[in-house]
Length: 413
Image (cartoon, rainbow, N blue to C red; front, side, top):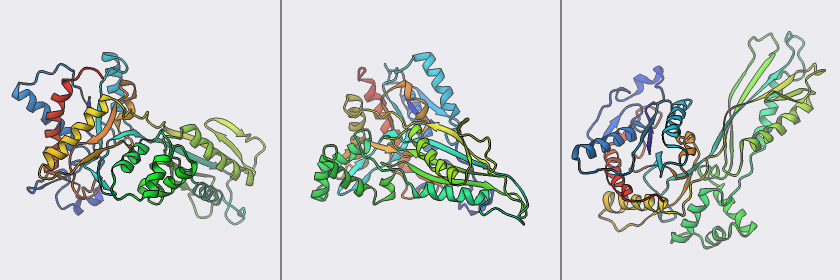
């Protein structure tokens, strides 16, 4: 099953005149195509359709294995389209009925310590929006309390931000597989770090050194740590009235070693401490943690929105992974860079965002998130002047033209 999504993020009207080419024109200058969605993810969607059309037109390929193209319509929003697709496929084929699912993800390769890595994501972090509201008595600002509800929520935000989640590197995280590949193949990797990586699951000190190495950089830190970001704060309606209701939304991307429950437990402790400090009640997901009766100062209400556990991690020790990874090496070593003798290493990776695959866990264990192409150096994804390097678009067609015929020759893994 090959997946993509039809929808794109909107273009704010205020930015339309800042585009070099109109955002929905699809202008092509001979090298790049411009427009909203050309890199996310019309590129992949059109390439998949073009590949299938080409195979049908030639008429030589008679697939023995069913090929499903699954295109959600609201991936950038709620992802309900993928849920409907899942329901249909479960009804038609049943659970665990697909050999593989390949969806959008990172593209190209990344050079790390002298190694050229192709990094399909074999897992995704989870997701939770925590909405924490504070209800307090109103009144006139001429006689204010020492801390208004906005001030109290400000202290809660400070406590949340001052208490990070703990970074953890374990066998559960596909990033460890990438690190093992780095230790095996890199000619430049520091010897002590190489040793620490190889011993990281046996020696606590070695694990700590690897964690310290990863947390030096924000891009790698949150591969092994749950993130928390205060995104929305609302409260107050008039300058001479005490705010009676203040809310804050905290977005968390949940590490594979964590869960929705462990994230909620962390925020529960944060709210509990502030509630105790100001003698407030506390309601968590409809249940009173601190009874609100006889709490004249008010109470916190904590609601869980858009809960998603971390995705099951796809295995990398079987034929499915070997065939997929080997075909990606063929793409880069033989088709894209045939004039070089470079060796590419395919290693598992972790996606910190979520794709439509979050709805497809019941269909297969083998879910890969990767786009087989070289992208523009700066595609401006989701931004002004979003663009697509057209040669990279042709890479996708070439890859799937080859891969669909290759995978059809294999029995079930």
